[in-house]
Length: 443
Image: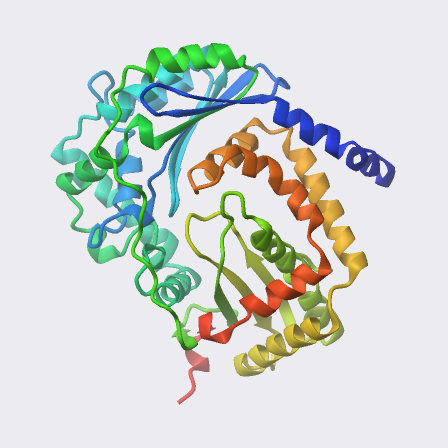
């Protein structure tokens, strides 16, 4: 197995170049960006339509409207009855779904490659021609509120994350949950939905990504046929969100809930995201998260879980795929008998020792080895490839940035990782949170 992986890694530069050769990009006259990825491992195709509009693009007071609209796009259009879109996909042997993030909303279908034209026809139709009734609004609003009840209200960890994000971002829309605040969701109406739809659902605010057993010119011809006639929105404004004021002091929260079975301490720091043409800092932070807490062999788990046995879990996390400043996080779940205050001190001690002693170069090479292997294996999934490009392009990056990212990661040095740690671990840019059970509340 080791020899097989080594052979794959030896071929990695060739495979990376190969995927670049398999990616074609176009732009329609109405401003729609088109990315085609040839991945002919199966006679199927993934059709993804991404909008540069997520929950962070919502106006104040209507949190959750981006996600609400995502649900409502499965209702009727001028050509399809409510639910008929998904039924047609299913009848053609495919599957479909959608998802909303802070920075984008995406709709996708996975079908046989010869059904691609039908998917484009239906998706293009609902870009501008949804037909909603008051009953649709009432019914689907109940659905999203129940979704929030199940995923957030019934999960103290999710409630804790919401409070931590709200403390992290005082002004930026990343401080509001993607699903929405319940008191605002409950009054979302037709006007709110249509205002968001009319502003953002246009070809010049969309990225079409098709991956699979397809020919780029054939995809372009289909895109021109189905999406090309849709007029652009010339009133679309640049994506400028409310700026976050300078944070000048650490923020701390303590969240208690009797349903908490395992208390923990988590701290997140404001951190730079991947920027077009400038991804090195984000790459260093990505490697820092892996070195510190990406797996059980990382620095924090090794010290706190296995050597000292003071934690049941310790880790670090970072995702640079974000339009605006993101966060770098660390977490420590203490073992029985260790208080949250002690767990926080343990976490800080290990990080300070790490910065002082530096990166274990052998460990770093193992992480890079694993990353390279994962990137190669990901080439076998058309869905993963489509998401890689769609998420990047709707988060402000370019196709060239996507192609450059793997090698930038491989080139990160131990010195860059330590420099990134010194920069990011600034308590004046941090939110520290304790999640407790009710019996652990101190008086």
